[in-house]
Image (cartoon, rainbow, N blue to C red):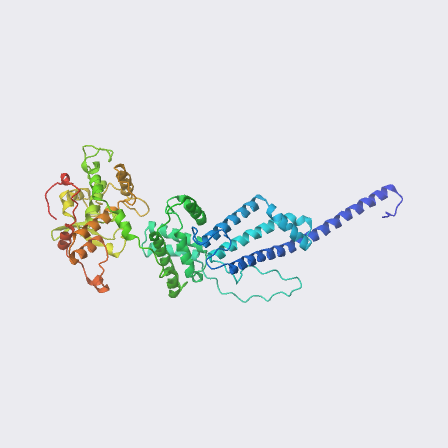
Length: 550
């Protein structure tokens, strides 16, 4: 190329200008190529993702019903279901690819990237970007495969974004106006709990348990409007609960771990799973939430019925109640221990000369002879203890924030004659001199619900274990099971059975009219039936303060 000059300095200057012009032109050309390549790259990656999802759909169409899509090693009769086997394969593969993507280890994608670059004539500069994009598309494809396996993503009506139209295509017409977006389940949660606290007077403990239910449901089924949910979503939620370890919720770290991780750990370690009774409790909480959605106009009555009615749960109550009863030998050991025979002044589990008649002394005795629940007894006040027609009784009712389990739990129960002989009346009247005073002032109120029985629950677990009463299933609530069973064995008439149901806070089993207008048997009749409850293996006669009759 001629510089059109014979002078050296001028030629040198013109050559420099020419070099800079050439460099600028080359940079502009490279930028134009790179921009076009990146635009092509996005379209290529969308096509790659669409092809991967189409292959997944073909696999699902070709498989036999009840067989896996990906877990080809699984056969009918193997542990778990075909769906569970597929989920393990999908989640493991996706986790490996996501880890490689995070670490920048893209060797598995480079061969695919080379083939695409040759097919589309892409420049070498986009190789790394293309490999990263392919890895991201693969992870997204496995995400969709998991949701398809769980039934929460469409198969035929694909909701993936459509490919970008070519530049020459006319601009699409603007979409029609969309109706206002419906509120999602998560947006209704706080309003639901406000109503539970203000209108239903739910305790902090109840609300905390129901929050766990809704958090798990959203993790399993996703956050959608209530009327976009289906019965299969609730079924899948209940089935997932049944796979969680029985210890779920006992560690504060559980809520920070995914459900799939917890289930995988339970599979690997062979842990026991949540019972159907626990699944049913979550189902009840979910039903209450959907009723709130109905009341707010977010769900129809028929829609709620379709979601929650008719789900079946295994009946476990009979075996559980039998397992939870104290045996005669266990009662003999327990009530022959220091708290009721003579204890150290500071240590309840050590023998000594003192019998301290506090809440820890009286509550197990009251629970054994009356079958009442711990909090029903621990929260009693002086005004709940009264004499009616010559019969001393305790009034178990909702008052001053006290919450009972159900409507039948509101009742009047006569004092058992053994409890009176042991001096309960004298101790109670001394401990609670005014109507609003608690019968057990030594028990502090704990937690947001201000329950007095919290310390007794923890103490009783430690105490009974020190004396060998460590059988699975035993708890303070075992007193209630024991009392109900022993009284049932002692009664002989239908009238006495009715008395038992009244005293234990059970529904009588009568019709609606019976329950509405029947004010129940008299206290004297109840006291006569309760006196049939005896424990000959338990000798507490040394605690008698006077010979009395109920």
